Length: 128
Image (tube, rainbow, N blue to C red):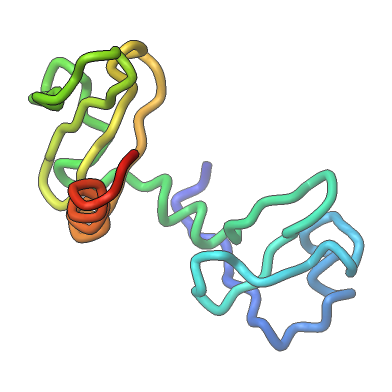
């Protein structure tokens, strides 16, 4: 992937023009779910809810981010684990990483610390 970011296609771009760029029909064009003000192919075969510019931003490694190897991270397992249906959490600088405790070598997701704190607060007061 090139270091040059793809251009963000403004929302006021005609859908027919955007469709040519994205390789889809005008009916498949929609706004990026990240509310960046860009358009993407939201529907159909080439669908992606996140525009190319946001995808490029997400692909760049950040200092202390999820590009760290698992053996470089400290993973924590919930003290309430009993059925094996649990997640593990690591906290490198500026993000929270979450992975399935039964699939430690599988995928992990990166969550904003504030969003993760909100989830934990919600889980404390609701039956999950």
